[in-house]
Amino acid sequence: MSNLGSDSPKIRWMNAVRHAVGSLTLIKVTVSGTWPSVPTLRRVLGRLVDLKAGTRISLVFRHDTRDVTQNFELSEGLAELSRWLESGAASGFLRSTDAEWELNGAADGPGRLREMPRPRDLSVLGVHRTHDRVRNRTVALGGSSWLRDLGVTTPDGSVCAGKEAKFRQIHHFVEVLGALLNELQPVSDGSVRTLIDMGCGKGYLTFAAAEYLRKPGMGQWTIRGIEQRPELVERSNRAALTAGSTNLVFELGNIQDVVLASVDVLVALHACDTATDDALARGIDAGARLLLVSPCCHKEVRPQMKPPPVLEPVLRHGIWRERQAEFVTDALRTLLLEWAGYRTRVFEFVSPEHSGRNLMIAAVKRADSGEREDRARAVRELAWNYGIQTQRLAERLKFPFSTNPQYPLPSAPLRSGGENLP
Ligand SMILES: C[S@@+](CC[C@H](N)C(=O)[O-])C[C@H]1O[C@@H](n2cnc3c(N)ncnc32)[C@H](O)[C@@H]1O
Image (tube, rainbow, N blue to C red; front, top):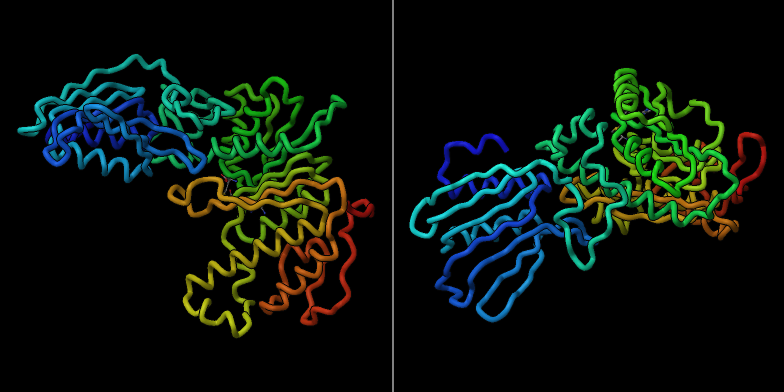
């Protein structure tokens, strides 16, 4: 952090703490002093921990004879530290991967601040997240050249200001991908597998997947990023060249008609509106074993929704209608995926604090055909109850909706070669 501004040392120190937390470069922070309201308290020590629910600040309240540990959301932890600093701290110490900041004489005035640079050899990840429930990072991406080329990290591997959420999203994505790949039946025929990222944008997640799938023991993978914007494709291919990523290629193309020879894993994150459906349909058609999508901009279903009278109070506010349209669209998608022979899971893959677009639908191809008739009936009933006439995935899978839920159930979707699924 180069510019701490002209504020008082206390404020500058606290700003440095905020920056270290926001950029995930915090190693430790300590506030020491005496607090008349809690006479036994000597210091408050903080560090970042990765919990199942996301990254948190863990604060240890060190009393004369005991420690009390509490985990806080990042913003709450910062507020807590600021509160103890303002109400009696004599000194503060902050260590991040970039530097150390020592604040002295803060109890009876603005304090004096000393900043000491640290050698920049620490990875952004892994050094400072020790906790019983810490998950091992599947990929320590801090030093990857593509992260620098795509503007996520600085040349020394620190996360750029404003890119913290993206950085977390990239890591969570890789963790989720790794966990789901473990669920697939291993394939040991030595063939090259394919992961396709539809609507890959700047390619953050495509690069992350490629790096993860180059790990020893992962087998041989080709990663294809499909994107309709030529400038992004060109930039990503340049970054791939710099990174020496030989298993990765970005292609100018459209989700609907890009040629897919074979696909093992299909990813489509935040492909807008019905592009998610197009991607899912392509994946199903190509026989992908894992589909991973994070839908956004659910525009198709909302104007069609004529909910049953009992739901009118739930839908009288615009925002509720919008949310309901999202739920219904994604519920239809999961039911259709199950009908098409997949097991589905729906979860938040980053904390809603970091991004509202955080819902993920994962679909793993089943060995058996599952409860296809039940699923087909559920699709029909859900659509009928909401007055929905068309939904893109249903259309692409040739699954007809009807205003009559008793309408005969459709058969399984057809593979392009005419072979029936699953
Ligand atoms: C919101 S961005 C998400 C990028 C990336 N998947 C991510 O999550 O970081 C959506 C991208 O999908 C691309 N896209 C949307 N519809 C597409 C289509 N039919 N074919 C190819 N690319 C598409 C857009 O150009 C855009 O770059």
